[in-house]
Image 1 (tube, one colour):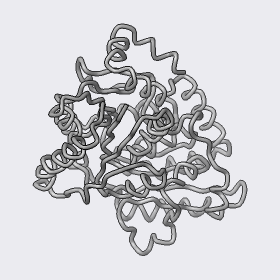
Image 2 (image 1 turned 180 degrees about the horizontal axis):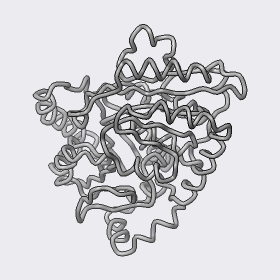
Image 3 (image 1 turned 90 degrees about the horizontal axis):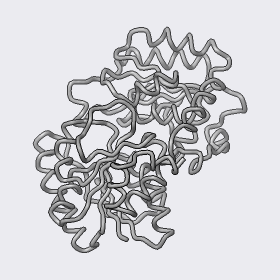
Image 4 (image 1 turned 45 degrees about the horizontal axis):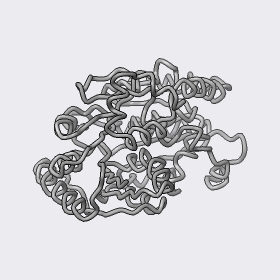
Length: 354
């Protein structure tokens, strides 16, 4: 079979990397299409995947509208040559292209940004979602017992590399933290704003008293924060998150990754998210809608000498209750459209992927 996967965000490379590897090993062909956004190209090249780069994404509102037509056209042109049997992702460009070319399109959804969902859902054949609370997406929705981060951080596929500590110059047992700042330029960020410069400075000053601080940022860091920049490649970030003592940031994906990896996360964002709420119930993420009480919570968490141990225990228990998401997606795509019918009639079928 031939699969075409359009990448909308660097995290999507991680979502599909194990799916791609498994299918390539089976003799199937996988082609990625993408925009040159953040570290997308770096990740695709690191994993040695075949891809086509459509250039920089449009940033203005008018540009995003024009981009809908331009990038859809580009996907169609590539698809006519590649001839995929099935399209995957949550991209409106590939969903519309698949519909025009009369091919099935399977979406994976976890952000539930309805502005984007409304654009791709009419053209998708099915949409796969986690079982945590979220807005229902109708008859095309298939829910699985898990979340997308398990597609690449499940213990079956990911083992934290201890050499990351040497790469970061972290002596054994030394405490360190990761802070994440986002750009706030995505369509779903409209109406929201990030951390104030005051709080960013305060976070760094306080955490530095306990241990080392590393900052991951979508935007260029101010000169005063440059010394804290996480300078390793993006493929090393998950290993660093796995060994960090605490994560503080505006990024929901990275917070959820921490929950899976067993690192307590403080997520600061005014936007509500069902997945974050799910992790909060398990005491793996603490969600703050604004800056109030963040510093107080950090102090309280760091007073617990067994913070990391407790987080690892909670994470392991949670992961053991979920399915192997990658194996499920491989089966679902490989057996389309019978897989859709099976899941509608017998949702418990997915339990064989634990």
